[in-house]
Amino acid sequence: MHLHYAQHRRARRIAGAAVAALGTALAVPGPAAGAGDGNALDEAQHDDPGTYALDVVDRSAALEAIEDRPDVDPVTFGELVESRSGDTAACGDSCRQWPQHLDEDDRWYPQGLAGSEESRWADAPATEVLVSAWYRRTAPDDHAAVDSALKFRSTDDWRYRNVPLRLPVETEDGWSTEPLRSHNGGVAWAGPYLYVAATDRFHRFDLRTVMADDEGFFLVPDRTYVGVEQEPYGIPRLSSVSTDWTGEPAIVSAEYTAEDVAAEVVRWPLTESGELLVEDGTVGSQANYWIDQDSSIDKVQGVAAADGLYLFTGSAGTLDLARVGTQEDRATLSWGRTGEDTHIPEDLYLSGARLYGHTEERGHRRLFWAAREDVLPSS
Image (cartoon, rainbow, N blue to C red; front, top):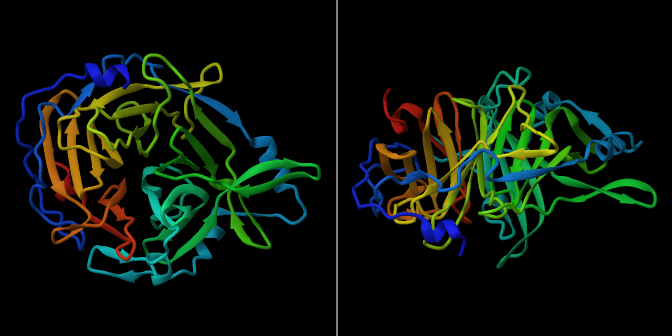
C-alpha cells in the first residue's frame, strides 16, 4: 500500500445532492446510491509542483522516416474528416449508437473520449468532431491490449472514420510500424495534439501528421511521455484524461482503482500551443489531489474539469461533481444508465454546450450527452 493511502484522512459523512436531471437516453435524474464523505476531493499530503513526473521519448525522427517511405502518403486532418463513411444510429434525442458489428464485438472496446472544442486548435474543423479511443483485447476475457484505434465522428451527420494507431519500429530495412498495444483509457485534445492515456504513459499524436498506405489511414505518435518512479507516490497512474484551459492550462488525469483506496488526480501543465510543458527533458506535475476513499467517487472511468470543478464517472453508473477542499457544488448523479441498469460509462468530454459520455458494455455501446447547463451548477 502506498504511503498516501494509509495516511489519507477520513471525514464525516454528508450527503451529496443531485443538482440536475440529465435528460438523456442513458442518464436518469436523481441521486445515485451512496453519498459523499466530507470533502470528496482534497490536496494530497505531498502536492508540490513536480510531485509526479513524465520522461519524454521523442519519436519525431522515426515519424519523419515513416512519412518518407514510398508506400506512405500524407493526409490532412480535413481530408480524414471528409472521408468519414461509417454510420451510427440515433437512440434517442441525445444518444448515438454504434453499428451492430462494433456494438457486439467481444474484443474491441471503447474507452477514451475527447472533442475538438476542448482543443482550442485554430485549424480544427468548423463542425465539432468527437474522437473515441478503442483497444483490442488479446481474448474476450483477457484485457491485455494487442491493438488500438481512434474513431473520429462529426456532429453534423454523426458518421465516423476509423484510424488505427501504430508504433514505430526499426528493422534492418529501415523504419516500419506495428499495432500500438495501448488500453487507451482516456483522450485529451489540446491544440493539434491528441494525448492518449496508456496506464503509465501518454502517447501524443499530432493531427497534422496523419498518414495513409495500402491499408488506409493511420497515426503514429511523435512523443511518448513515460511515468517516472518518483517519491513518495511512485509512477503516475493515467486511467482517464481531459483538457482544462481554465486557470493554469493543464491535462487532467484521474486514476482508476478497484480497491477502497484514495485515487489520484493530477494536473499536467500545458503551453498555450497545446504541448505539455517540458523542463530539462521532464514534465513535472502542476498539482495533484486525492479522491477521498470514503466518498461515493469510486472506480473512476472518466474525468473532466473546468473552473475548479471536477467531474468523475464511475463504473457503477455515477457522475460525481467535486471541488478541492470544499463541499461546494458537491453532487452525485446517475450517468450511463437505462432504468436501474448501468452500462459502464467511460471517459468524459466537456464542450461549450454539452457534457458527453459513452459506455463500453457489449450490446449497449452508446455515445450520449446532456446540456452543460443541466449538469454544471449555475454561476
